[in-house]
Length: 235
Length: 313
Ligand SMILES: Nc1ncnc2c1ncn2[C@@H]1O[C@H](COP(=O)(O)OP(=O)(O)OP(=O)(O)O)[C@@H](O)[C@H]1O
Ligand SMILES: [Mg+2]
Picture 1 (cartoon, protein in one colour):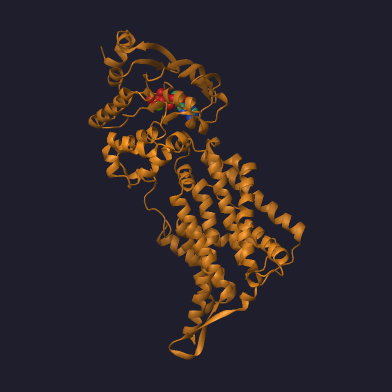
Picture 2 (cartoon, rainbow over the protein chains, first blue to last red):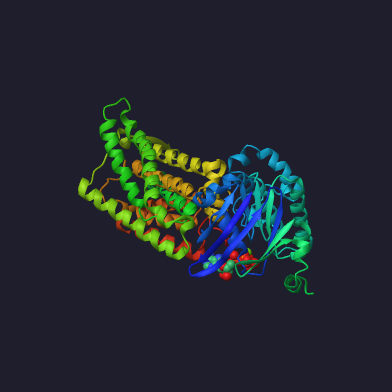
């Protein structure tokens, strides 16, 4: 469903991604891990179109996205839940969800979406009229995910959803992601620093380092790799 | 005698205040939705004033509308100016706004120079095309007033000018409608989302440039409408915008940058101060008084009447 083919991205003269290729199939949960500055967020931004690649291309359901504007991509079924949540702080929880449902697919099924989001994150239902900027970090992350769901995406990209959250809250978030995966309505591409959790929930993964994919495959295989064991498990 | 004068000045202050309020709302709307400080805003008013002269003076002249022709003309000017603003953003302003901006400060400089350029083109274009002689239009309503008797005094009445009253009501209605649109409609919410977090708005599939075009169109339309209404008591000439520019900026800052209703009150207060100042000070000091009040408010309440005390994180 998503194919990224030898993508190279640079900010000015500085390369952030070099020849990166990844693939996500329908219904899969794929994880991208890597140290800070590896280019994970850049990869997501290039897929959703707010950063333009120097070379390489992104195919979504077989369609080359190079001529599709960033705003149009949201209408094709790609939802990007960005790093740092980026909720609309001056708008209420409900309004944030409505904005998530901006694309036609989301708008026509908004009532159903609300039910689903509120059952996944009951706290959002209680706080539906609260300004998003006044929510706690964990609640904002739930809202960001809910807002992504509201577009009824075929592919949801989650950039470090557990960042800065207390372990218990992070567990709730992981649990909800895993539930979305099990429901199987969409493919999920996840960037995570918590590699152990990410591995537990994902089908496959890619390891990104200084802008290059250095390893990829199923996680039980990845975890056998010495470099990964040293870097992420301290073994 | 003094009390009657006071009440009379208060009345004109309130009526004029509604127009100043609307002027400020237009500027605040553009700033609040796209972060652009539009230096051409007062000149859009000038264009609106001339358009009302043209429409009411020729197209609607001699129609059954009679005294109401200028008001109707002002309403026609709204959509016309919306189109002008929309296209202007599409062709020019868009180059300096939205996601293509990497550096906010550089973007502000570019916007400043660009809108200043638009202002100069409008002013000089009007000078070339229309000459520098002031022109004005009057409706019979400009001379008509309701006379409200003062209860405690049989000799004096309070004059409430009819044209100014209709103007004021229109301004309040337009401000409230705009506020309602922005709070409650889908497009209004998308404008707020684009202002709040443009990158996230794009992820939602919102076309942020289009949102900005609409916002700029609305801001321009409001300037045109405010100009079209004020022309009933203020003669127009190509540089008339200068007279309003300072008032608009002071009003928007007083109201707390970015707040619509705050901007309305900011303009309102300025008109009140201006009119009441004429009671005790020579006319020439009207604007100086405005500035003294402006500075006092900034000293005592730097965030403006309606500004947030807490910064957005
Ligand atoms: N807008 C930008 N301008 C210039 N350089 C950038 C920009 N955004 C990212 N970079 C650089 O690109 C590289 C990759 O950044 P990116 O944010 O993609 O990393 P990341 O893997 O998401 O890191 P983290 O785990 O810290 O979120 C970094 O070296 C970063 O400094
Ligand atoms: Mg990142």
